[in-house]
Image (cartoon, rainbow, N blue to C red; front, side, top):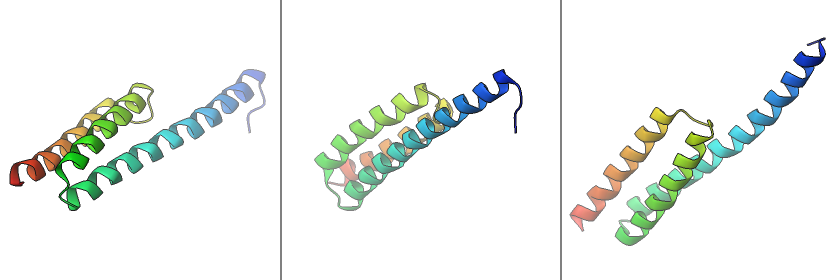
Length: 90
């Protein structure tokens, strides 16, 4: 355990950030799940709407550091590809 005043503060800050980032990552997972459910249901409009929301959520939390920007880009790209496939087949 930390003994210095600054180290104690750093631990408190890290705990807060960890909780905030965990919540952001959970929101990202839920947004991705919604898109994949729409894609599995072959609902073209619903999938596009869910993708737009997911992209917004992923980008927002990537900007705040909950996930790496490269990982966010990869997730968005993969979802967009799946939504496009549904749109093209419909």
